[in-house]
Image 1 (cartoon, rainbow, N blue to C red):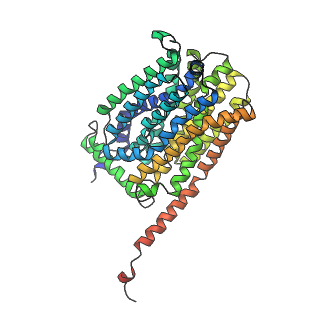
Image 2: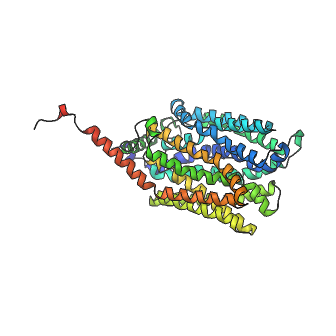
Image 3: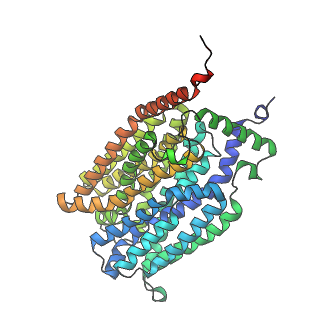
Length: 450
């Protein structure tokens, strides 16, 4: 009789989730806040530094160039050194650079620090997604991924008012409000990074919070899942980088990230404009209210996905909802309706992501999973570079609503890609099956003579 018969897997997953997700969630809150709090500082920052809208958009997006370039190497190094040491290293280094953003007082120092911030944070997100594939079986993964994705809305629900409050401290100790904001959030990140070294186990066998029997149950379940994926997964890290399924999902994820950051980097100033408020505590609270609906969206979408198994349809529907919300936010006129539309858009493009990640991780395994997940996130991250540039260009070319209309169209295209992803997944499996059949055909010298 196996150990799994004594210890139900579902109970072990609940225990793992309760222990790991709070740590990972706090890390993601700080990651999202440190990369996007520039949106809160935008008005004050541009006024103090004299940066143009185009320079701001370039600096906001340039973060993702270094980030995208180093995603794959970072994930492969994490496989070698372990999640605990590598994720802690990432947090500490990006926290230091985030604090140094207080010295970005002119255009070139702004660009340099944003590139460096992207380089130091590279590998965090795909590292966590890969880490969870080692702990959470696929039938529970959308829901658990969803808990991790609470980090984005929580970064705005709590981080928004915090950023607004810090901006309101303008002049304290001779510092501008935006300088105080970067300094405080960066220091907090370094402190949490140091704590991660002790708090995060590398593998289920290292998890002291699990009994030996619970460890055996989880390890056996993950080994069985890995075995079922072996026939469909690319063989090795390099082959995953050219795999049609991986590249297809990377294109879909690019559209998601363009929707996310096309809204995120401009959300505080958009809310300020529609409400007639300056960017500060009030706008921070309203921004947090917009993001509150995203948590509801994540809960609903991930539970439906896991219970029905229709993860592709749920993900496509969520991104389609995001497209509608983004479009309505510039079509409607009443401030309350605009805020509601933004909330719907945020709920859609946050809810799609934890469900989306169950699709490529359902066929990737081992080193191929590490590199494939990193490549998908790497290409998707370029959306963070492109989105503010595309939005700024479209606003100038087509009027104030042009950027949001373009972003809504991109999100709609992404929903179609996800809806059709079963076709490419079927093609990937067919290729894998054909390769397997060729590999197992005996050589002429081994065939039995007629």
